[in-house]
Length: 233
Image (cartoon, rainbow, N blue to C red):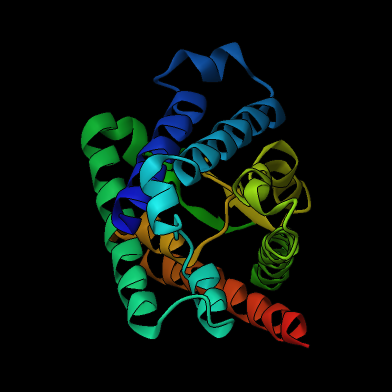
């Protein structure tokens, strides 16, 4: 079910990226303001995340779409080790299949620039700024999840709160700060989502893609674990 969740998310991300970023689609011309397009993409992907989390399948499995969150739950004893292992495998496979399906559905509008598989690459300020931006985003997501789960009154709104972090403000701020260049991609952080978006891009831009993949996979894992430790105190 985690494969289905992230695969569905990646197809939705592909649709948003193509609809708002590809010159072959009318929205790019109709909405020339890049900030507004990023805002619309963020809203679309935030609502997609909330929909998946609160779907019957999402409620049944816990909607683990982010390996960093899964490992945090493992650290907190809320997930069994074997479950966490297979969650990670399913997340990567599901995300990869989602990207391949998006490529098959949307063709060159998805695979060619400026969308380029909805990949997220370090911005003009370089990889170090991108790394710290990813640390902050992932830590914010994990902090919200832990705070909401710790409250009996707020726990049922955890999915809505987590999905909302992917909406408009979070999408554009890292780009405006020069941290990330987002090709109409989702701002919902996650190593599996980043790995999936790299599958086909690596062949064309291997060195740059692998470097940005390292940033996008390490930062969430580094930032979420200390929060788990603090919650245990």
